[in-house]
Structure formats: structure tokens, C-alpha cells
Length: 193
Image (tube, rainbow, N blue to C red):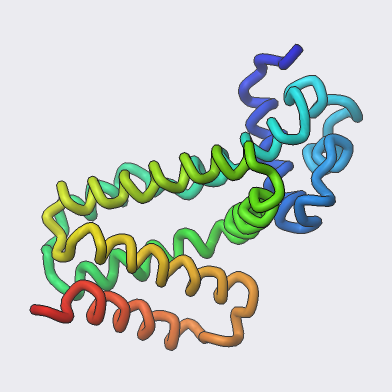
């Protein structure tokens, strides 16, 4: 029977994210999560039906924690609709996502694991599709330049730049990363302007 202490559950899922980032999917066990969370052995198994449940909840939690806070969303809504603003928003996005290093690495592990687990693939596909749709809808409602295709191209481009930053940070130093973000915005969103 799954437990209902939501604070404890969140701590266990956060511990699972740390284990995934450090040990990979093969290292994600209930015992490893218990150890990471500093709780008695057997605690995680009281909160999650099985390992797939834990993997799924870890993926959902990463997306929760990657969401911008309301102040950032409001700032985006009210900022000027020019290239400099757009570039700053994208740079801030790369920095914000990159700063949750373990979460993004855990998400990469989950994506790899999803190639072997159809149920996890289905759940992640649904979650990523919803994230893309949410980003496109926000973009369109905000009045920022560019269409849905531009939003998707930027997501793909910046996601890979984030992977580089987290896995091989010396490939693109910060100054070059920022220049690449500006070039992506310029070429993808403002090329026809």
C-alpha cells in the first residue's frame, strides 16, 4: 500500500533524481533511494508500487522543478517583444535548466531507459509533448516573435546545448554558449525580419 505523506514522497523522488544522475538507471534501487534520502531501509518500497512507478515519478518531478517561477513568467509576459529580450529569455532558460544539473542528467537517463521500457516511453512522450504544446501556447499568447516551428526548433537546439553544458562543459565556455544562444535566436526567429 502506497503511503500518503507527500513531503516524504517528494523527498524520496528528489533522492531518486540524485541517484539517477549519479548512478544511472541501473543504479536506481529502492535501497539506493533510501540511502540517498537518509531514511530507514524499506521506506521507498512503502511509497512506490515498483521501480517503474519510481522512474515515472522521478521524471514528473524533474519537469515540476524545471518550471520557471511565477515572477519569471510574469517578466516574460511584460517584457518588450524585441530580439534582445528574446535572446535574454533564452539565455536565462539555458542557465536555469543547466543549474538543475542532476535533474537534467536524470531526465537523460530516463529517456535512455524509455528506449527499453514501453510504458515509460509512453509516459515520457506524453509529458514531453505536453511540455512542447505548453511552450508553443505560451509563446503564441505572449506575442513574442516567431511561430510554433521556431519555438520547437529553439527547444531542440537549446536542449542539445544544455546537454553539452552538463556533460562536456569545456566544449563551449560561457561566453561562446551565450553567443550560440543569440545566434540561434537570430537565425531561427529573426531570419526573415
